[in-house]
Image (tube, rainbow, N blue to C red):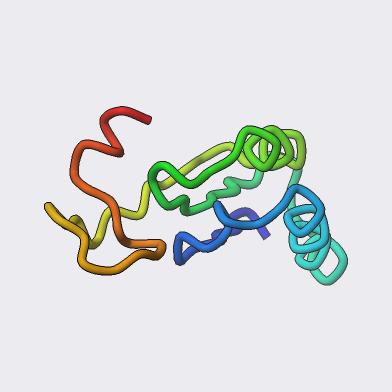
Length: 90
């Protein structure tokens, strides 16, 4: 396997321990090549330093900012309650 994609923005909300367990799953079931492209989709403004450090340590080599919904004024909290300035700032 030369491509692994973790998407939906949710990975950026996980703890470093949760990330370790999830990354072990494909490697336990498939032959992930040493030069595989490993992409993690992240919600802007919600990726903690410890989780980012763990993602990089585990082999993430591509990040994707999930900006499918940009709200100028949020009327609800949650993963997609960010403005278009957050991706620029982070």
